Image (cartoon, rainbow, N blue to C red):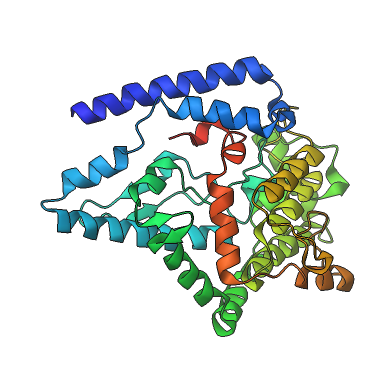
Length: 350
């Protein structure tokens, strides 16, 4: 009980400091200013904020569930395995909004159970006010729990992710997944319908009435480009399964925000400029040495989600090995300059 009380107090203090800093940095009316701040400054601020929350809270919780050291190791292994598998699955399906309330922890074997899949197929990147750049949640509580099993992206967690990704990228499994996802071509999500069609870019979806009007207009125009929206989201999943570099895919998804300015989530003019987001990803590549001199294999951030042959050929050059793909994903999920630029409700500092 005391630990839970301390967790609430520490979490409140860190959140208060985070929001206070955010108000001073961008006055909460233009979140896009964060994308123009220097990465070094943000990393320093992120370190200061994280000091208010002990990094071993999840470890303590597992220890309280364990009757012996052996039991603790077993629980930790179960948690790491379930976290690795759900993280890879969430990445392939583009599931976002991974805040703390969207995880359940089994008291029997410490398996992690994700819930609430409302933001799927990249909606978190393309349609929210603040683009979600993290592929899954792997913040301090998770990463520190796995120490010393995992160090510098090498260990049980990363190896499990590699095995999971390799299984999904296997030809027979990839074909089965793509065939299953084809249902979304005919039964599109409502969010895709109300956000993507440039024919109706003068309609602002803010309430149920305007939403109904939007859908009625679309039903009268069956040749709407919403099919293109479904194509794009299925193509993104295909690129992930083919092994294209995560940053190349993410930058292409960010560019889709131009098509989604009508989205129900774009209610206020506070979203970051698309080029500012791309610049952040370019600097991420430089920090993690994912861009090298050989121009043929250079990781690119200027590609687009398209069925055109020339784009398809360029995407083939972005394919990386499974270990490289997993390493890039973990780096994105743990980079302080990326984490601090996420919506504050995700509490990426915990």
